[in-house]
Length: 304
Image (cartoon, rainbow, N blue to C red; front, side, top):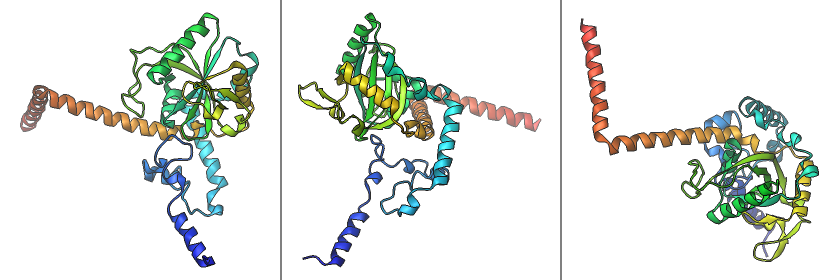
């Protein structure tokens, strides 16, 4: 039989293993702690790196003043750079009342919240080859009947929906997007318009049961990528998302993802420039000669 001291020691060992948030951030999909990126900046301003340590005391976990500061910072950032997203949920609150019966609905599962950020920012998305074909066929069918295709977005492992978008175009296999987190994996691209951006946990839809692609009957939370949702169930889901009282959204982290992407783009451009110089040594030699001639000309002028 273990003594009380041994039990306490075992508990401390479990605590020292580190919490779930140290391996995968709580919102799901994004591997690694957000605070590891540009750590000094976020330690001072956003406090992301210490947001979910495994042994944080309860009284240290919630800081109302810090929470209010972060919310205000988020609002100012979105207002200054993404004015089209201001009050997006309020503008579409009554969508479930006027949605067309010829519309179709699908679940979208993203590997990364960063990709959802890019979808909202650039108004695009891409699924697997079969997924793009399914969505494109649905888009063509609904377009002929003046309906729309709505996509319920969720990140793998997050346990929630992040929002709803509407397809604006069919998938074009000749279009590409170079900033997905998994480079080169997703081919084709189609335009989307975001209708709702709001975190709504799966538990709010536990009573919605549908038939999956494989014929099994399961809760909607078990749906995989590009699983179609019947009209009546989808309409209920839209109403639940519209009325759900929760201010949490991916918009809270847009500044972080923007900074991360800007640095990524700079690194990509540097790699392209280095590759271009290595593949064309003559051009590099010409550039060096130009710099040398320019330097000699400056020296001559100074001597005169």
